[in-house]
Image 1 (spheres, rainbow, N blue to C red):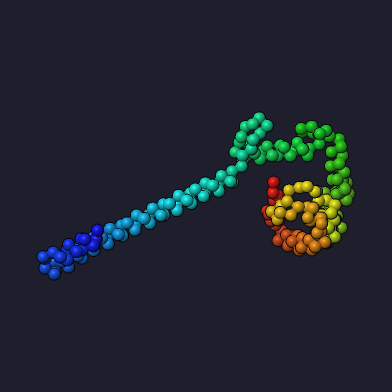
Image 2 (cartoon, one colour):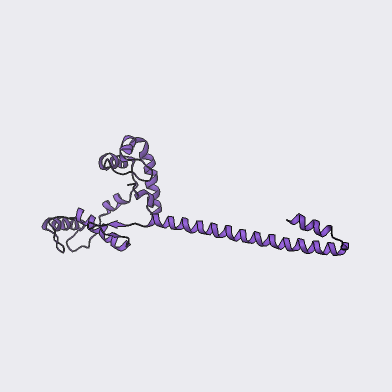
Length: 203
């Protein structure tokens, strides 16, 4: 104990100067020990906090990793493979069953040709949109258009977005929400960037 050491020095038969010198040495030595202990505890705390940071980072990375189990039961975490499988899946769903792999069916060919021909003003003209169509696409939105889109086109029983509101909610309160959505879409059109959260869904 420090007190016993101090008492032993003070009660010794040495001169006052010698006692003072010994006490100063003792205090200096104990001070150094104390500082070393503090440094070690700081290092231990720092390494502990770094370890916690590493653990949290690993946990975050785990949640970022996406894995796909294919029809054969094989699990893959390769992003390119996962993207290819998703593209293949949705291509199969939305592709025409009459079209061949590298040739469109007559119905799709005619529809494409009709659409392209409607864009031409004259047979030799390059494809372009008429001024009336251009003005219509570039004009401001109306509340009535947003209401129509929600009432007629919104599909029911779908996963909600990050807001947590389903299309049933939007349909029920369409009169209240349409002006709010109108200002949101006007802002998107003025900025020219559609925010990521607006196209997210919760599954």
